[in-house]
Image (tube, rainbow, N blue to C red; front, side):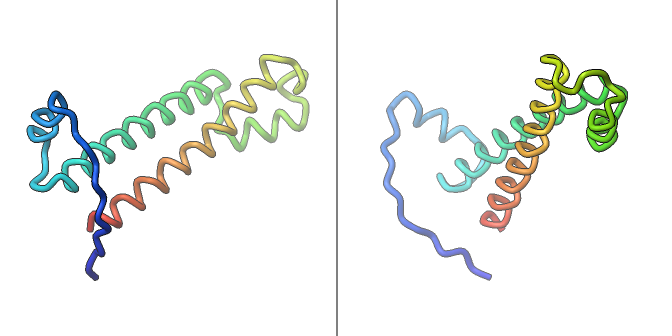
Length: 111
């Protein structure tokens, strides 16, 4: 399967060009792809760390947390701190899926 390249013209400032040229990759496309992959991995790692922080804080995985929260076993589910944690935890799960999708898309185009 061949990848169809779409021409894109971008201006690179003189201070950025030598840094970009020193990056891994043979072509500008490969260099930019590598930079994007690294950034996406960093975003995913930060997300995973925050997810782990919630698992450690509550001693539960999200599915168990959600069940116990709905059953009222964690206290007032509408209490500010608990509600904020529940919303942030759910947001992180959505964010993690987003970063995985972006990584898969970029890896697929790099193949």
